[in-house]
Image (cartoon, rainbow, N blue to C red; front, top):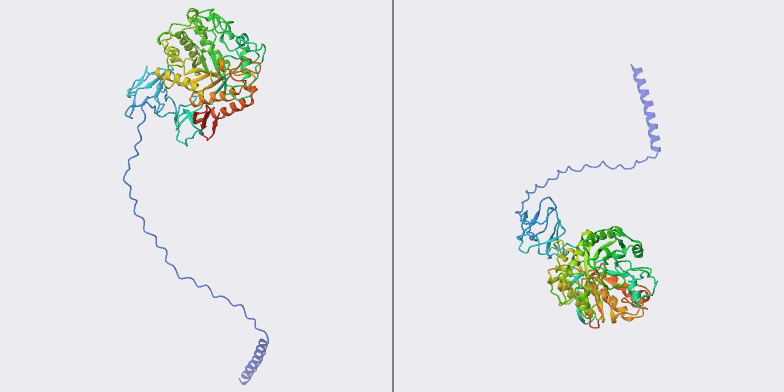
Length: 559
């Protein structure tokens, strides 16, 4: 027992010594302090979930508001193109089949004329090609008040209000062409030109050298008139009688050459010159002695042939934008306004001092029948008539007699034209004379119930003592030719056709040979740039006889 106790004590003493050695070793080893350790993140206290805002109250519906009251529609306006005839009566109420409707097609259009004038009368285009005016009392369309045809193309607008900045003329005004605060739209086909001469006539009068060629113009123009036209100085090629050489036989060769000269420009086709086999009054004197009866009215076969010839022209030359009936017809004076049968006969001419053979020797009804035949062949192409000259005064009833002349169809001359063509020539270089002539023709249209019929100028030039020198050196041409153009544009004439471009070999000229005058070329370019296709908002003849115009884009010109 004692031995076991002694043994355990001995083991304990050995253990104590080993522990003492270990402690000493530890004291000799450097103690490496570990980096501090961040305390664990403290979780934030729990947050209560956000409280949702209370739901908004339901919106309060505003009280119903009546729709704005639309102004009443003008009487006669077509609302749609359905199979039903939607009409607005004089009270602004929409009705269906409530008023007389000429024609048989429900969708035949209604239109205003002039078309860009919101206050203009409303017309209906009937299936027959006639237009009918909406009665002022709202009771329907009048079958007889204005049975003219609607112009088949829109070629410009009427004078209307101008709400922009009104231009001020640069100096004192002698006469306004365009009243302040108004505007006029000039058609894009505005400046026309005759190219060539009536060779035979000019040779006889010493105005032309045989074989003289006609150069292409070096100044701008928009279209050419088919009347006195040639390119080689050998023959006049624009007359009907020169193309239809036998009934139904057409020779286009010379006219083709002239058309090629135009390089694709549109054509105003004047149908003039009765072939010998269609003459109602054959072999009579005319302004062209070489061609007897050329100014005659048409016999029955001739009227049918005129329709066929018009169609043939349009088919061959689709660039024709308008037809014109005849050239400078003048009926005997001293007769009443309702005399439709008296004609310019050789007997009348011999009995009347100081008269010449007429360009058209038929009666007013002969001319109306001729125009109706052209109209039938023209289709949708514009028809104009009848190139009247020097008959603008109130005491001359030539225009009225044509407009009201009865035809064999039961119509009148007015029913077969979409516009009146006139010729204005300058005899004394007085711009106001041009204005008075244009105003005179408008007065005739107004007096005959045609206030909306447009006016076109198919010849303008210098005449008689006013003719210019042919060598291009005449300073009168430099200013007056462009003035003619500006006056016609500002007076809302739908085109202005210069007569005529012939070239350097012309011996006497009404245009001043622009190709030989650089100043005249420049002025024609200037007026072309401010007229064709532009809106004029100012125009006047100034106190020094110069002409001023202003366009809507701020351009002004004084010549």
